[in-house]
Image (cartoon, rainbow, N blue to C red; front, side, top):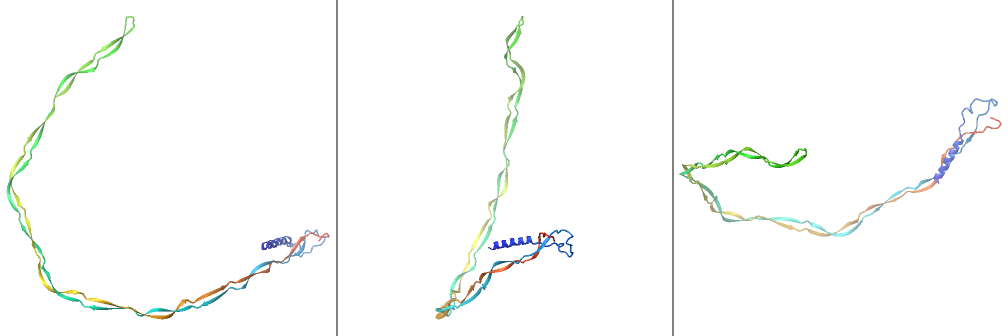
Length: 300
């Protein structure tokens, strides 16, 4: 509905604006024209439009929102409980140490080790010493050669055909045997192969005198045992002790008032109340203007 009413008001305003035009300045000037001076060009008529209103819906506050606080008191109850009258305590007592005289064997001197050196024993002896080892010398005899003549076949015997002509000039094919061809060449032949002969040279020795060790130097170890003696001394039989005595706590039953539920604050909120009303509002103010009209029959 609101959209339809707005469309109607807008169309009416456009129509009024198209009809109303302002009068031209030269049409109603201060200069007076004679009635018979000329022909009227345009005629205008004064018109006016009334104010335009429309009715709208408006939401107004009837009752404002409110806030109310409510205090809910705490709840208590009586109960019994066990409380400490005297706390648990601890005390200590000390027992002295106990001693006793005992004899024991103590070391006077530790065990020790001493060493004695025995020198080495030497003796002069003769022995055979190798001066040069036996060796074997190789002697090489070269090979012997001689030069000999030898017939060598150059080409072997073969058969061939030969063409001859008779008295009448006719060709005659003859089979011919060709002998082998030899020539004498010189060749070197080995008469004796190369040989190796060996000569053995014996080893050479010499007798020498030298000093040799018969017995090595020795180190003799002597162990001296430790020395002890018996002594009397006071020894600890039992150490001093600290005894712990625990005194238990003492309790008593008492009655007391305890809180079951704490006091709290409750807030009640009331929302604001609104209602819709109708109100008439001005949409467009009325205005005056001039409208062009047709000239009257008698003229202006």
